[in-house]
Length: 208
Image (cartoon, rainbow, N blue to C red; front, side):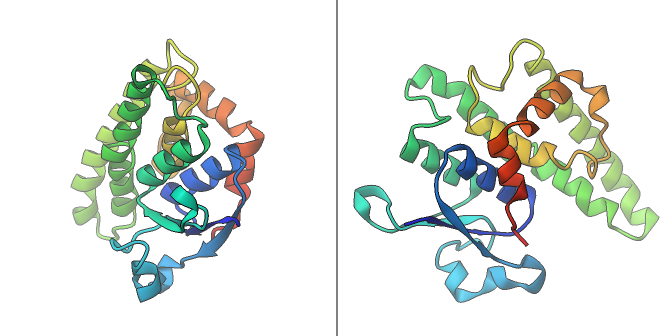
């Protein structure tokens, strides 16, 4: 039976649609319209108690039992464990995957998300400080990524769930007001990732 992806069209959700496509896992989308408050519905809170998308339900979880998983990082690790794809078995090889996955969850997601927020604030006096602060930090994070990619093709030694996590937010670079030409190594990585058929299918999936 296919995995249920409970999602909406946001960066954190695109990480999962991309991963499911790249891992060649059958799935069906259950749209959770956050603009209409559907994330607060009791049936969704049963699988995502923080009222955030994405969440998945796997009818064929460990031991053949139904399992639900919320939080995009946890979902990516679960899918990596389930399939053995894009998630190294060797602990030493797994370290950079975890490092860059946590980099995305702790910084390259929350910070550009604040840029999105302050861009929409109508009052210039309220907008200016927050936008300057979070735009500066967003550009710093792009610089960290650019330096990392100066010597390697992917964020870890091989293509991994960390790349899918970061890609979900790099996809929104125009909304971050970031020109990838200023970060040539990120631009090269981004173009290569977006050229992958699995990634293209993941971004084409209807999530809203």
